[in-house]
Length: 106
Image 1 (tube, rainbow, N blue to C red):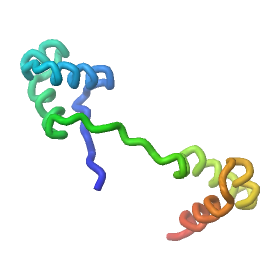
Image 2: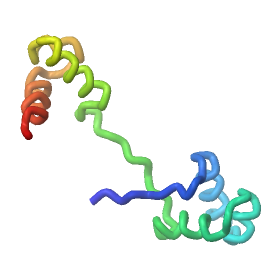
Image 3: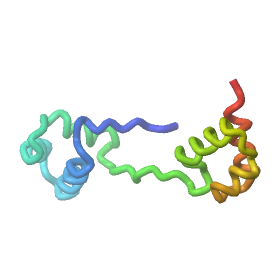
Image 4: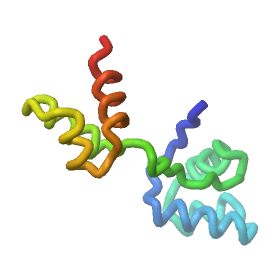
């Protein structure tokens, strides 16, 4: 199950700052003053993860990227074969074939 993490309007740099200050034991009030943000936003941002920073999610290199999926879509529309697309993308033809089959289903 994927957990949706809200940013509460904090930029990635501000999020890093919140985590740094949290590790150093600063209060919610001190963090909110330093960031110029409402205290309840800081509290909710940290509470959603139980105060434990989640590792950034990364896709496995075996999975197709959005760019590759778009390239496959455009290639199919242009009448290219799965093998030709596979060669062009540096992927196995079976991977491309599975993606084409998956996208044809209603």
